[in-house]
Image 1: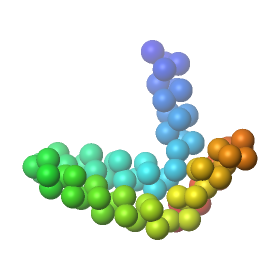
Image 2: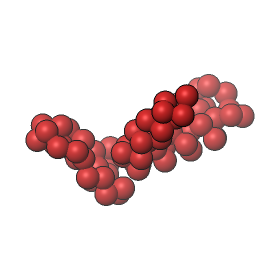
Image 3: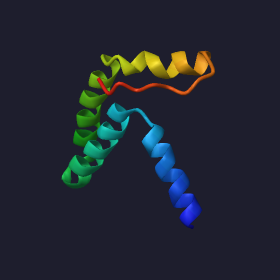
Image 4: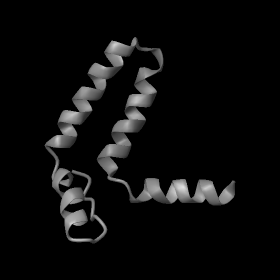
Length: 73
């Protein structure tokens, strides 16, 4: 179990900061929201993520066969 948790944590640490932040906020805010409202709130974060400089980094890093360098903005 510890190896699984460590691997999961390592995956999160390598993830795009804006994506992780959006997931955390969506989870926290949606606890007391109706489903439709929770999806609307997630849409706001998705639009913010799409305007970030990181949105191109993932595909670019993949195409160049290297790890992404997330800037978080």
